[in-house]
Length: 584
Image (cartoon, rainbow, N blue to C red):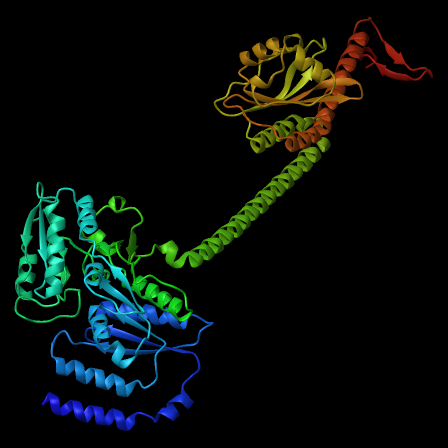
């Protein structure tokens, strides 16, 4: 049946293929490259190589490159007729000579060794994804160059043991294909270097379902070393060097040398990076197109790249600090900052600006309320001062004492002090006595007399007419020990003294005292309290005038009563101003 299909396919290709002249006319200028992939279509490793190689080829701006892609999948058949049919199809399909061929995988290289000179004589070839041992046993044709790879089982096992130093068993999984068996032997050789501490559990050559079952029952202190599985023990063939098994079924970590297995359940290892291999092969092909010299074989830089899956490291609780130097960690979940850094920064800036604005508004509101409260307090005090001044200034002697007492109470309540006293100078002027006082309930009253000599510092300030406030006894100046002792004796914690005078005559003092706790006396409050001096000085002046009048009248009465008979007092004009009782 297959032999009948091939002639029909060739006939269709010959019919559909444009004439050679038309192809030459329509072909884009530049250089043409054949990308020949070994293995079946969709093989993960060759697909990654091809994608990276094509990107490297077409990204070279000075050279306009046309890339054609073909697949060589002959390993599953091993029939000469099949290869002959494929060779004939390629000859009919590609009538234009290629400038270079990029072969991916050993199947593509083997095919070109047998068929290049018959299909595309002398066309330079770059081969990649072929093992160095494989190439060492081949005789490359002129113009052929190979970038070889080496599967680093030793480096992969070493990385596994560094991550899991308590490992006691290594389970090796691999297939039955000839390439699988070569890889299996290399893996066994890597494990044998640790024969004194590791026990090998050989799972190579088994059917896939058996491998999966064994992976699910391995001991805890085991790691899995994955070789290639081109075919399993049941004769089934799989895609390329990577095992089709579900690696996530293993109950222990799996390490690999194939970069295409990272992302499918393997932790990682010293792997072949197929994307880097494709970029490297594309760059080598461009070197050939430019006529630059190259050695027949070279070691690919894509071999032995320590690469690991961040998700599997987290799954098995493996410490990244134990990874080989220069390791790449793929699939790392980005942090919130890495993912949304700008958004977070903008949001934080907006929140900060909003917070500053709100704080400013709250501070402004607080200042405004404080200013309003201060203004309201000032207004209340001014109203109180006006009322006190009016009442005590207009009151007759009969009700004056009561109004002064009421005024002291209202002012003391407003100031929240314990005692308010209107002191007047005694006739000796060496002491002051309380003329009027108000005392908070439960607080002792002022002494009946204060000797001015007991308070030398306060006396000097009083005589100078200077208002003096004391928030605490500790605020007394140096050398005021006598003043401190005197104030402590009468229980003063803080006070303000307002001297009262008329002209140069000192009449007394208005004193507000706290005896429970110290308190501050703001400068603005001190200035306002000075306004009380005038009305209360008037009270003392009126009282002293009244006292003087009473004294004079008493003296006059005594003079008139002393002589016998009728006695009269006559002024300078001879008029009688006052007589005694004998005139009645």
